[in-house]
Length: 257
Ligand SMILES: C[S@@+](CC[C@H](N)C(=O)[O-])C[C@H]1O[C@@H](n2cnc3c(N)ncnc32)[C@H](O)[C@@H]1O
Image (cartoon, rainbow, N blue to C red; front, side, top):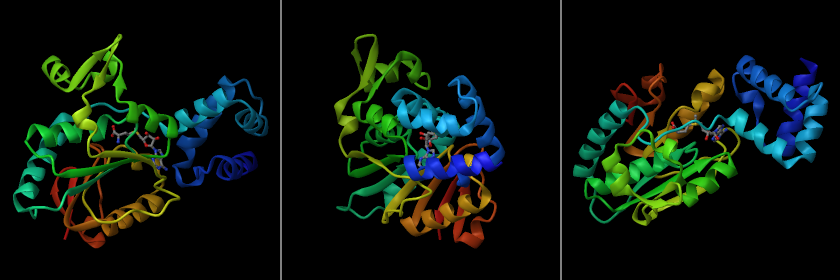
């Protein structure tokens, strides 16, 4: 236990990641398995390795941040989201761009899915800010290049119309990169930006402890414009949504009352 306190402090000071905000048992299991595979005999030695070896550092960050993602993840949830977007579009004031935040966006599959959904419905007046804690994932997202297996949520026809062939993989067409900015943002340690009509934050809060999760929902509430939408992961629920000020639109979609 003492070792974990030391390790958490070291990671916070040196990598600016707050491990104490993640679910502790799950996180400790993940750290120990990575420590063993790096060949370290204790957490102090593992911290030294992370500090001195860039490859081990990246492996550690990738492992604890859990980057699994896919285009149009949980397609039926995305369809409900598309339905809510249509209603929002109908009442959106002309002129102002619709502001969207894809928080914890991993390799960009999620914000690009949103851009595809918007452009396919003929809507181009939007700005998407896509953020993640993991700089390596953000770099990949900015490039927009994907291996075939990373496009598994898409049909052949969608791949043909949204991507261009690039070597053995694919690159997202440049129009989907218009209006999309990738930035580093830590949901635990950084202040939240404001003024969004839509926030997506899917499949990351499940790794955080209850207090942190609750604080983040409160911060999302502040970040949203009135009647804005919060879209969360298929396995996630906001139990106390009404006391936070949200209304529930469907299984994973809430609105700022
Ligand atoms: C499982 S992926 C989810 C990606 C996407 N939202 C989806 O649902 O497919 C979780 C993402 O959360 C990011 N993440 C983990 N901790 C974070 C934090 N404290 N702040 C911001 N992003 C974080 C990881 O780097 C990873 O890219």
